[in-house]
Image 1 (cartoon, rainbow, N blue to C red):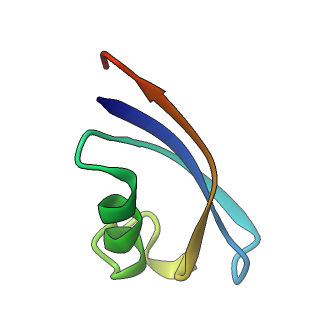
Image 2 (cartoon, rainbow, N blue to C red):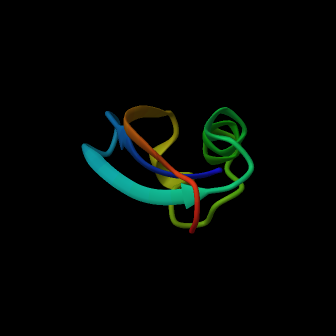
Image 3 (tube, one colour):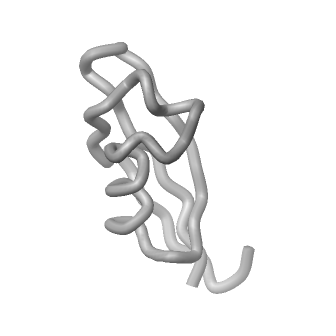
Length: 56
């Protein structure tokens, strides 16, 4: 299963669109832990939208 998501940072008033195959909860946890350079400054991120697909 592949997931495309939109997360939002209230502190930066910014949205980020991403995709994952490891599961949304784990991916958002990584965003909020600062693993991604492009989202590190916007911690804490919350999920606003999720769409699941069978293929990438």
